Length: 229
Image (cartoon, rainbow, N blue to C red; front, side):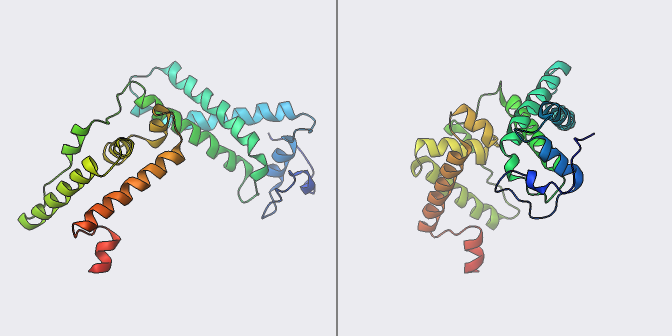
């Protein structure tokens, strides 16, 4: 049961965070009770943590088949850590809630995201990230017809050459890990002690270089190829 408050207490929302739509009474009650100066805030925070823990447990249980080597206690710990971190995130971003969805729906997303990130990190925790150049030779070269096979072989040959000679070592690492081997970007960011944003920028720059290399060889891919056609 959420904290009670008058429906008309819109002024209780944080300054600068007026909702784009009128929040429902339950959502307004949550936001009001979680204000720093609200009486009974500790109780509201405890109830919020319980809600986030239920959401985190749901996500952990949904994904637990991807981590068969973990035990029940490990999943419980992951759910609790996810709920703890989600609680901190919700309280920090409380002023961004605009009433466009129910408050409980809004906070659930924090718990689901935290659980998903922690499970991905745990799945890769004991694994070595595939960053070695040998992985580049695993690019597929087969095709449905001799002509398509030849064209694809040429494309991948040019890509391997561009990756080998046209990218910086860091760009090669990021591209191989994320684009070729499916390493989650948050996992790679943690291993390389960097941020997701920095890795996205590196990946973008690497792809731009690859496109430029292929264009210099007269090869167009994706939207560029469609425009020429």
